[in-house]
Image (cartoon, rainbow over all chains, first blue to last red; front, side, top):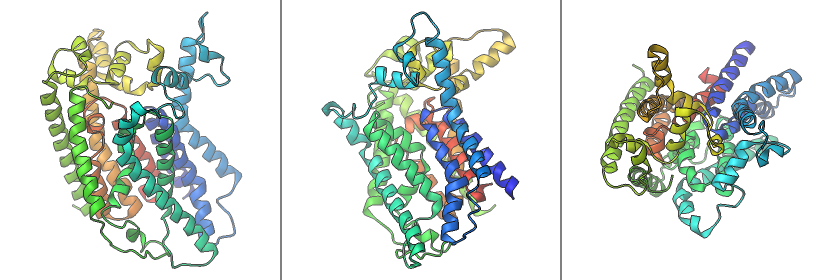
Length: 262
Length: 179
């Protein structure tokens, strides 16, 4: 069982490493390995009031560090390739002398003007408006799920089983969504949320939660009973579908005519 | 055929249909004058111009001649390697070094189709194993077909389709029941 578990996380880490070969924000995916190997077993031990603390051992921690480093390697390698290309000449680039010489950080700042609050100008308000629906969905659902995750642990400690709890499997996705949404809102070209959110499973789980109370699906799996079983939400779900379909069609037309947003 | 298998067959059909409709819409609209005529300088046919928008210029340039400018390091290399697949194969077989844009665009475009089909199935598996509900898995997967950026997820050679596929597969393996 232990070998099967280790092989599973190794394969997961390889897939996530492949993902981070395509986009730099793939380094955040390391968090899923840390969650699966260390955090979730630890939380389950708390929930089950298991005092043996089998999840906390040095060997497991070292393996976790190793496997969660794999998704970071492509980004680090890319920085190394950039360093070789631009910092080995007689006229090295300005970023070569930084404590952490990162061509990616320099390029994002220099050529795309990416930085903390740099995109917060009047001219970019339309881009914030465009990205608002998907960011609002992500942030609101993530905050909802994370607030209930806290209840899960605190209710165990108070032995209160009559409360709504967030199933552990979606907590890392909620954390990932909050982190990514924060980066997109404060330190990126916000409209790329339309592209990046489309790559998150949490976006569609959040959209699905507009149709059906997703917590009711977990009620039979966990000791905590959901108080809102099978409730359907009409207006929000309808708005989401209409916005998705309309914006999808409009974005295809703007793409074809080479109009913004990118 | 089990219920999840039926759902996945339906999803694959929907994705293929969606890809065809998106391609038709984009190519038809691309016949109208574009706001930016940069693509006209590089390629000639309408469908090539429809593919060549925004960051695809950077991806294509790196795929053709490798990283040449500092700003191109904003993009990680594997997408470019993918776009080079046909050109490299042709070079090995016939010795012809390809640098015209069409093979790179076409290879990237076809790879996006495969990634899209794989992604929707991977999302179904991930959702099924997270929520233990085929209905929820189907709902989330169908909603993913109404993505907020269909051009970059289902049509153009961008990094997102492949990032999405590998992310879903990796996330699913973190779950016990996906193993």
